[in-house]
Image (cartoon, rainbow, N blue to C red; front, side, top):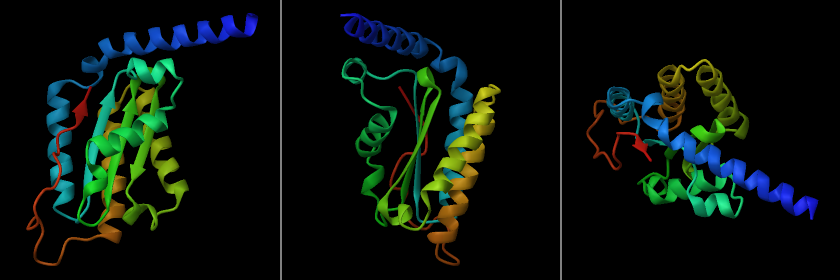
Length: 177
């Protein structure tokens, strides 16, 4: 019974932390910051054929919390829901933040994931986490965008003389929910 009670208390604490974090979402990422990030994504995508999405959530949905789902599971779900997997060259990247757990996940589509070692993505997340611990969300996201952009330019550069000629497959504005 003690183990059941401990599990219940852990779930309850996680639930409360996630509901509380939803309220602070717009303080961490005000509308003007989201606009700047959208412009940076757009500028990045003129240099390569990839697509970058940023998704920030305060807390996980109740259904995820109830069944004890991981942050990675949610990031992969959002990768699909936001259609990052559905790009022409299979080179989309999702930068996912979950504020309630101070968690960062970077999900790359198979075209880029095969070319980039897993440790590179972990290093990017670590760089972002350092900035976030200091409350510098814009700096952390800008750094992540620059690092992801560099990989996309290296592996999927825009055709010479044709930057921005292709259509923008996904919205550039971060998804906040």
